[in-house]
Length: 607
Ligand code: M6R
Image 1 (cartoon, rainbow, N blue to C red):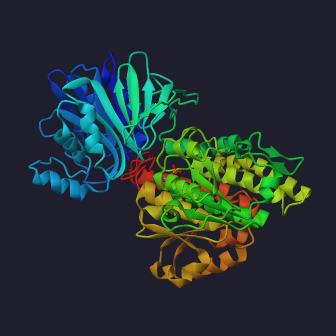
Image 2: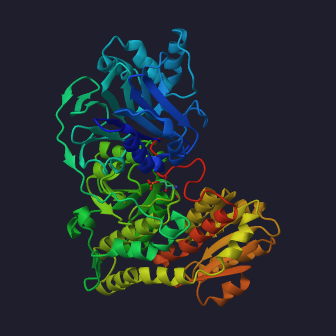
Image 3: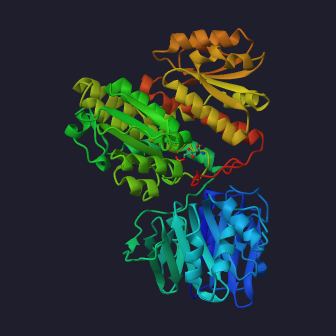
């Protein structure tokens, strides 16, 4: 998953390309590269550096009106300068940038090598430049089509041609591309954010489509060659770039915003008097809700963990069978999609290809799928057509924090709607509604007094292994805490349901091992205490996240981190906060790249 920008017009291409890349860096930041199409030749600069660093080296760049640019997240081939994009054909007259994976790379590459082509990189992407060159007989469009039709896999591609500076050609199959139509200029990008500074008039490319871009706009054809008549749209969302303010990292800023972002997700959606809620984007009244016999939350990573919490809440409050599924597994196991099931696609970015694939699988099988998405107008939101926006605002740090609490909140709001049609009386619904409305205050209360996070971070920083444990609603929280610690601090750790620990992972514990135990005062507390004793008996150090006033757990723990008391089903919104802070502080102590951890990307747009 990479970011692509391309520009053709009367203006200097360089600032437009670099501005676009900066906004797309969330898609990958292993390396950065640019190609400017000048009368003297295709001028390429690429390196294993971030966008800002490459920009500083471009003082000698020639002025050009046409160019393509790329920020990479490595799939095929290591993170090297040679593997950075753009890639050129043999004679250096065609340049391409690519997002995606070419699945028939081996066969195509073998064929090209047999024809005498010499490769300069280990990437699958370089094949595309050579295939176009092989087919080229003076007509770039014809050559592009011949080349692209040979590819299997996913791609977003942009190509420019030394002999044809009046054109850029792009193609999409599975990797998003949007074309911005300016005044006598045309810009292509992986995402509208890279375009909005220059124009808000856009055309989205669909899968298996090719765009022939000139200064006058874009002509779209299907891969089969049929002309497509696509009206342009006006981008209305707010694409303003988030500011870090005085905080040292976006991650910390986003953790601190959570009282406000959860509040935003609740605003206008809770009806206390009716003990009910309303999510307009679902277009569902009580009759549609009572017909739901099961709910499946699809997602990856943090979004999957939010889906787990949501599914547990639905079962607990609405007594409707519900489960969460990892989207990448769901899409390939020929899942059963029953007509009375409701599927939610949970995604911060709305661009995660595994979740998108799962959405498409549900649709193919005639199922009902709705988005629980943060980014407005994203691919998953548009593909679902209906759903809930979680409104957490732009999340910049690669480690998801505020999106998690907003996703959980949105699913809890849905739970109330569903539960009110079945299991909850008016009074019970009112109690749930009030508890939900109280959540932002409880989050603020904890964040104002987060407890001994620094000591907890010191304990995990030196550890060879950290175990996160929780039961019931605290198990997905434990999973989320371990994911955060891996992502940000690169500390080996795993999460288990606390009752499962004795079936294997307990063997990992040795005297002094830190065990982060999420144990609020809920229905599973007594069992959690027993598991805590089992841990202590092995000499491990328990860092307990527990409810304020729970002196029994506080006195047992090696380190006690009290959090405000809430209902069981609401507790993940609070208990996750110390775990986010723990990962953050551990990452800072270890001098990690907090907002852009190694090997990761904010939107995972490859399988
Ligand atoms: O944008 P999405 O919510 O669909 O992303 C899903 C995961 O890639 C994401 O949550 C990932 O696990 C985060 N880096 C977690 O912090």
